[in-house]
Every structure is written in structure tokens, then in C-alpha cells.
Amino acid sequence: MHDNAIYYWRTTFSLNDAEKDFLKKHDITKMYVHFFDVNNQWQGTNGEYVVPEATIQFNNSMPSGVEVIPTVYITTSAMEKMQLKEDEYAEKIFKRVNAICRRNGIAFKELQLDCDWTKSTRKHFFKLCEKMKQYMDSTQTLSSTIRLHQLTQIPPPVDKGVLMVYNTGNLMEMTTDNSIFSRKDIEPYLRDHRLADYALPLDVAYPTYGWSVLFHPGKDKYHFDRIMRHTDFSEYPQLKEISKNIYETTTDVDFAPGTDSWDKAYEGYRIRVERPTANEILEIKNLIESQLKDKLHSNVLYHLDEAQFSHYPDNEIDKIYHRN
Image (cartoon, rainbow, N blue to C red; front, side):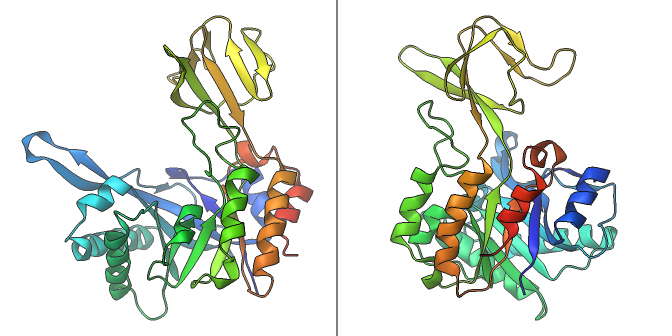
């Protein structure tokens, strides 16, 4: 049996009625809930140290019938700083997850670590996973996100992985078509690495979200400025569409006037709107499932947010969840 699953990636756990209905309507029984980040900071003359950030606060209880999978995001810079201290940080992470769970009446059977480890940090991340498993009991499972580029390396020492089929392109390059999801970025990995041969059981996560990427003009090219939440610019006469999903500002424009939100662009800036369509997702999903057809797996959406999933009709969500 496979479970429909979804990520929850906000710092406050609070579901509105539409989000609760979404869980029921699509028979979602597992939720990967972002508990906190592990990052590194500078502190005066004492140098750098590793700390938890963006810890979740639970304002709602979890809907009945939905399993919580605590998920901890670890930055690569923090991973580098954990060298030779993996046991210490495994204990700290596990104790913090346990404390949050106890406070909120959550009994977890799976814990997930999310880290974009590379060849230089692989050894440290793998050691952290090994130490983490020593703190978990025999009924608990350790999982890890697996990015497409990590398929080229040996799997981490965890019980299972979730293949992240999103954030596949170069966000900061103006010439990128879609940094969230692009067939030309994804397909080479699926061609060169048979997922059925990967040495870990894999679930698969697909993106049901969008954003805009703002670029400012430089001497010879446009440079990445920041990500913006706004994706609909149809009612902004200050913007002209210069190509598919690319806009240029003809004057200064504030997309969130009267708020603290920094969503302002100046004249001459460019905006790339990114949101994968259901058809684009389904094309890749069919390729993936043709490789995993003999392996039981779950499909996962990123992430639970009415403002995001409202762009995808229920029948499209059902098709993404449905196993061929």
C-alpha cells in the first residue's frame, strides 16, 4: 500500500478550512512537517556556530488520520561546520525534534533529514545519519531527501529516500526557463540513472507551487535580486511582457503597498514567473513511474498551501497522486 503525502513548509502550523478539505479530498495520510532549519551564524569574536532556526509553532493540532513526519533542513554551510561533531549534533537534533513532538502530542515513526549534500559534505552528512539512527528506536525510520544530482553518488545510510523532482534549474541565471521544474533539466538524470536500481526505496516529490524571480540590470547582464511571492502581473500596467513568463518594469512598482513586505521592483528590472503546469509534471511522472513500476512508492506534493494548490484543479492533483 502507498500513501498520499505532502510537505508542510511554514513556521506556523495552522490549517484553514480549504487546506483541511484538501487533505481529506485527496486522501493524504502523511505530512512531512518542516520542524526547523539547522544553520550557521557568526557571533562576534567567537566565530561561527551551528544553531536551529525557523522553528515551527503549532497553532492547530494535526488532523486525525494524518501521520506527522518531522523534517529538519540542514544547510550545507552548517554541515561543513559539523565536521568531527556529527554525534553531538545528531543528539541535539533528535532531542529538539522529540521536545517539539512531546509539546504537541505527536508520536513520530519517521524522521527526515533534508540536506543538499555534495561530494565535499557527503562524508559529514552520512556520518550524521549514522549517528542519528543510533538515537532512534527500532520502530522508527530515518529518511532523507534525495536531489537529482545526488543520484550520481552512493545513497546515504538511511532507510528510505524522497526524490525531490523540483528546484532543478539555476535559479539565479536570467536565461533559465524555469528553475522549479524543467524537463530538459530532469530528463538527463532519468536517462542516465535507472531509479529502480537505486539502492534505497524511493518515494517521489513533485512541485505544486510557483514564485517569481526578480533580476536587476547590470553592466553586461541581469543579476539575481530575490524571489517574490507574486505571480500574477496581469493588472500591473507598469510591466510589459517581453517573452513567455518574462516581464520588464517600465517604472518603479510596489507589489505590496502599505505592508512590510519587500516586494518592490525598480524601472528596468525583469521578472521571471515560474509555475510548472500539471501536464509538465505528469510527463515527468510517467517517465519516473515507468522506471519504478515494480517498486511500491508514494507520491508527495510540495507543499500544503491554499495559495499554491488553488492553481491546480482537483482532477489534476488526483492525476499527480495516482500511480499508473
